[in-house]
Each structure stands twice: as C-alpha cells, then as structure tokens.
Length: 104
Ligand code: FES
Image (cartoon, rainbow, N blue to C red; front, side):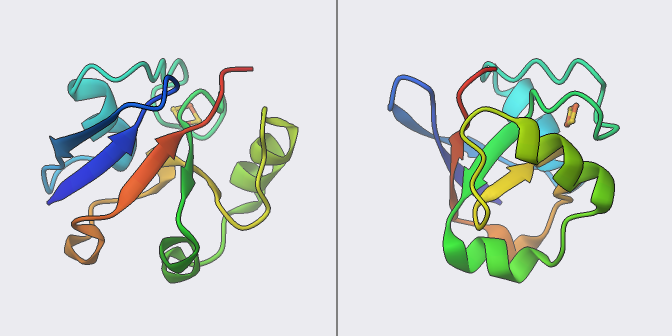
C-alpha cells in the first residue's frame, strides 16, 4: 500500500505502508513527526490523524477508548479524526490521503 500524508506544514508526501504495520507505525517508520508515546495502545493521542469522509465511513466505529481521547484532542473532527495506531493495514486503503492533526 501507499498512502499520501499531509504534514503539519501542509506538505504532502507518499509513503509505503507494509502489511504488518498499523498506520501509526507506517507514519513513524517513515520519519513523520508522530510521537506515538504510548506505543500504539490508544492512550496518548499523539498519533491523531484526519481521514477523508469516505475513508472514515469505511473504517467502522471508533472504540470508546479511542473516542474519549479524540474528543479532547486538538482539532477534533467528529467525522474525520482517528488514532492512526488503531487503523490496521488494509489493502483497500491504498492510495488514501491522511493529514496529521495539530499537536496538543
Ligand atoms: Fe498513542 Fe496511538 S500511539 S494513541
């Protein structure tokens, strides 16, 4: 898979997303500024991204833990905010664009 990432300065780059990675791991391993300080356990919100509406709808419900963190996060979008550590590899997501959320 490849995903296009828009960073906090508004620059776009396309990165590889390998099947064993969550989206957060793909972002981090491609040197994007995603701290992921909780290591991917849905407890820090530093991996917050915005996804497009169609992608958001295709991902299914956010867990209660994820939603609790996101509503407190900078720039929260009801139909767009996700924790990238909670997005597992999915070949159907190849070619999508994600935007890094502002840092808290
Ligand atoms: Fe901490 Fe995703 S890495 S919430």
